[in-house]
Image (cartoon, rainbow, N blue to C red; front, top):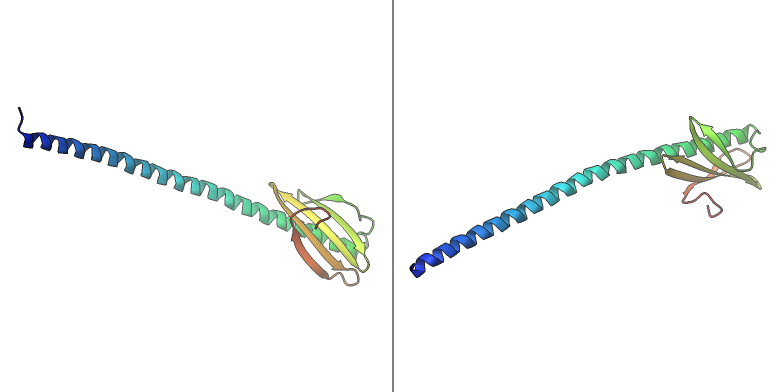
Length: 144
């Protein structure tokens, strides 16, 4: 029979080994979680950058569409096209509708680039073709 003192020493060693094993498992799990979350952060960060670049290009395309409409309005080729139509600008397409109300021309333009949309509503003065209002709308419909 072992002395009582020796038995408790063996039990303490077993407990210390168990605590060390569980601690190693928990620390490994935490390190894996941190590594995976940082990896996903950089992965999704790339898509955020891609989305912002697509939005910039669709905004530039919509602005080009509006500029072309103002140019057409100043050259009298605009008034024959007051209905919805699509125009190609540098290989991309822009949808535009226009109407004249009194002394103002309302131009609505929608451009899409890589599933990123920009909807603009621009009001210009018919006498000097200056911009009265320029705003971005959430939708390309009558609510804008």
